[in-house]
Amino acid sequence: MLRKIFFTILFLIPFSFMLYYGKETFYIDQQVASQKMYDYHFALVTEEVGNNYWRLIEKGAKQAAEQHNIYLEYVGPKVTDTDERLDTLDRMIAANVDAIITKGMSDPRFRQLVQKAKEHDIPVATIDTDNSASGRDFYVGTDNFQAGYLAGKTLLKETEGEQKVAVIIGLKDAQNQIERLEGFKEAISQEKRIELIAVAESNITELGAADATYQLLKSRSDITAIFGISALDGMGIVQAINEFQPTTRPYVLAFDILPETLSLIEDDKIQATIAQYPEEMGKKAVEEMYQLYQHDQPENIYHTKTGVIKKKDVMNGEVFLKEGE
Image 1 (cartoon, rainbow, N blue to C red):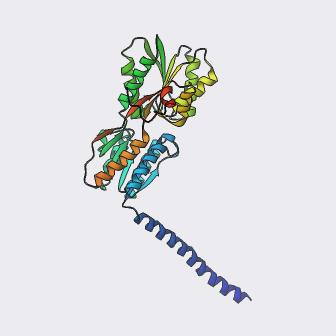
Image 2: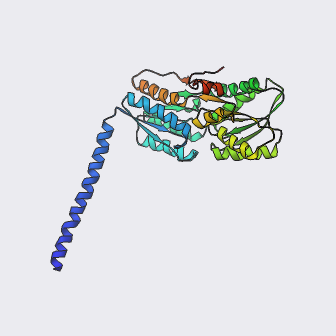
Image 3: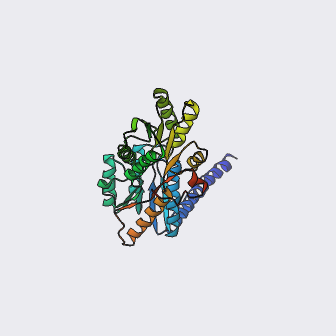
């Protein structure tokens, strides 16, 4: 009896290994076969995988990728983390992808990684935020200084009398946020009645924007207008205003055209938003990278459009048509 059990075990062990490794081999073969279906493998390294704004960039990028038989890999940190994003970029280089599209960064390591990619013959494009000194091949995205300037001109046009303005910024060291703030300052400097009295950081989260706004409203009862520089700031600003309930509701100027922002414009909780078009960015970046592989050198900088969206535009369905004023 013991001998029978012993021989049964001896048979089952190699048989189990055969099944296991056979399954693994099949899975690997399937992966290889899947990859061979595509002409190129591009990596879109996002700032934050779950961010709605970056999901729109991904959507446009995937549309273009499908048209050109490109496998597009969407990767990045779950929450905003500079080191993890740089590590992800390094992993994509090690994976020997055909191209990398990512947000430009001011961190010195970013420039080193771009150069490392070029040493491996991997072209790099920046999207949403540029770093022209990094050696990247091209940039696709908003002219962030002009977008901020447009925001400032909108505030001048839409308000009267003395204005005490607070700004909620996503990250104070993010290049695109810095450029938007500088453009905004340049525009409002043309009117003495507009004064920028505070800048607070949201860490690119709705909750962070709500908390920053609430603290500002507590400390400065004279705030009459608030500008949210990153995509989730407008929603957080409204949340804080609803909770604090100031005697006079401030004028709110947001950034981007996320559905939640447009709903708040319809409800008169946000008066206007500066629209940029992330789907267009994603699509254009992939198309330009594909053209690079067809030996057609893209423009060094491709600025996507910006616009001012107000309630009448949302009601008229002109959100994706109205360009900068």
